[in-house]
Image (cartoon, rainbow, N blue to C red; front, side):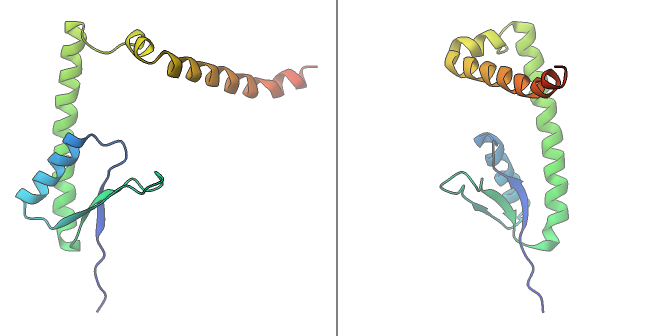
Length: 125
């Protein structure tokens, strides 16, 4: 007899805490056995939420797809409302909050563009 392996339902890299909490809650409500792995110490592994039984995977994926559809609709509506209210985060807000980070990113972009243009410049000589 071959043992069933757990299936990854949600990679937790860049997942907000509220979303991970929602996924745990709908899995618990559906009585779908799951467990969670924590991120690795060096950022190589992000951790995840795993469905323990193969038989539960289709139902878990169906519920996950429905949850993501509903969440996307809600977040889009919240963003649209923030834009209408004038409270949506803009580039200038980000630049004011993290000027060094923005400056470093702009410099990195300029360097990459320069490196990409270098072959064309050298060929043109």
